[in-house]
Amino acid sequence: MSGLLALLDDVAGIAKVAAASVDDVAAAAGKAGAKTAGVIIDDAAVTPKYLQGFAPARELPVIWRITRGSLFNKLILLMPVAMLLANFAPWAITPLLMLGGGYLCFEGAEKIFHVLFPHGSHVIEEDMSIKDPGHLEEQKIKGAIKTDFILSAEIMTIALAAIEAPTVWMQAATLAVVAIGVTLAVYGSVALIVKMDDVGLFLAKHAPTPIGRGLGRGLVRFMPVLLKILSVVGTAAMLWVGGSIIVHGLEVLGFGWLGHHIHDLAYAAGHAVSEDWMGVTEWVAKAGMDGVFGLALGLALIPVVTKVIGPVMGMFKGEKASH
Image (cartoon, rainbow, N blue to C red; front, side, top):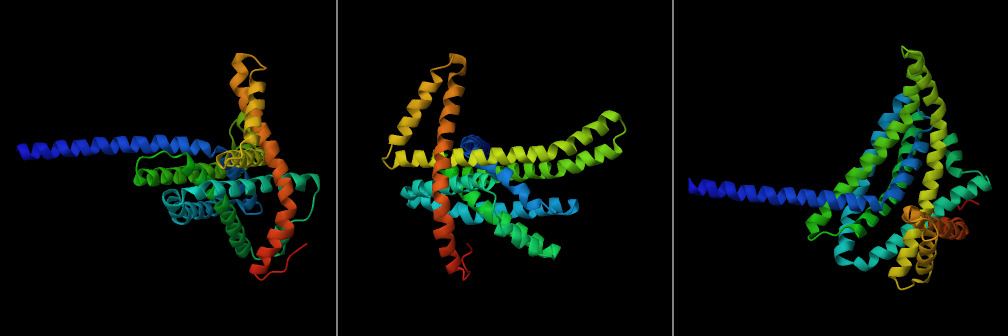
């Protein structure tokens, strides 16, 4: 009997440790996930464009396939690499973060450049040349998963840099929780966004009250506005996150001049207003300066990517460089 009680006591102790570990993982995952907010916003803003042109009945199945691809990217492809880097080559994390930050700056700047100086997109032209709906769906899904891979790599690297775990298993569990939570948050939001106009249309036609029908019509009219807002927010998030990653990376590598100046200017801006608005003003000023730096860097990278890196990658793929 005493042996059984001792066993139960041991089980209770293990359960307490496990519960504490779960709490630690959840807390660490929440902290790490918050660091990736800018990339998450951009991911949610970018994805709906891949669903344009599909029949409403195909939207949710396509989102589910992209979600599965995103989980595969994060858990099967990226997470093992991230864990190996963290434990055997931690020195590589900062340069990789900066590489991803540079890509975000390029993408954000390219979007703004496209708005200011409209030009044809070979991706859109290729989509218009595809007549088979099934083939078009496959191409769209592949494109979305490729974009997700790049953004997921950035999310996983940022999260990994923010995780403070005592063991490799706790680190891996936290990273997995971040990966699953971010994916469900992003693509759950995307599903709500792309189906909201269908909900509005249904209410506009079938709601039993004038208020309900008015709400439906309002949703239908508001969704294009929301998508434009998401596009703007996503672009701003790209530039802010990308710029801040580069600035912080330079500080880590011993080149802190730019980061110190941004900090000093943001601090001065915060102390130029009342104490109630000090923290918010300082944060906005720093984010704004990181974003301006990200835009400048991204604009500088556009000719490098389009005239050098793109053609070189095309040569490796056996494609002709397009100008």
